[in-house]
Image 1 (cartoon, rainbow, N blue to C red):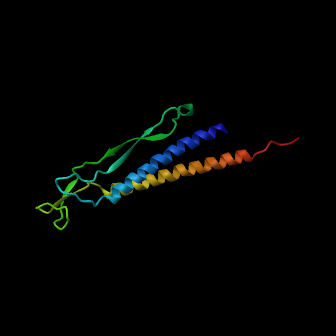
Image 2 (image 1 turned 30 degrees about the vertical axis):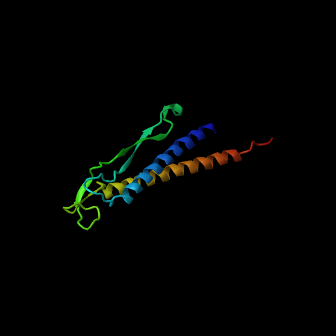
Image 3 (image 1 turned 180 degrees about the vertical axis):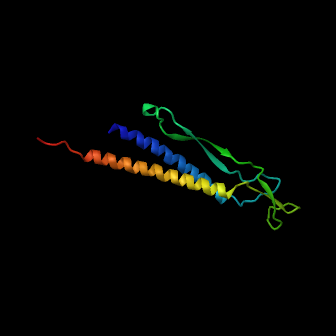
Length: 139
């Protein structure tokens, strides 16, 4: 029975990391078309840096955590958009250097990871509930 509790901690930590990853991806997608003047910085994409948490039972690890956030380049890319309110005299604006294909792929990976960890939590909960319902036999 006590072997179930680390499952909740490990999968719970995975849920947290994948949730933060999904939040970062959604911010990146939402700001992919933002523009700024060429004299200012572009929106910087966020990338979650995950790290394993050592010290689990039997040396298997105790989960994962967000170790930090990496940011894309503030230089972004300059594009010609003369009708944009941020355009300079040459009609150029600065946009984030965000690859939508990468973002969609990251979103799919994070979503599947989140779903997998949630399934583990649900199965462990079911096993725990089943173990609690077992009563010792009489006689």
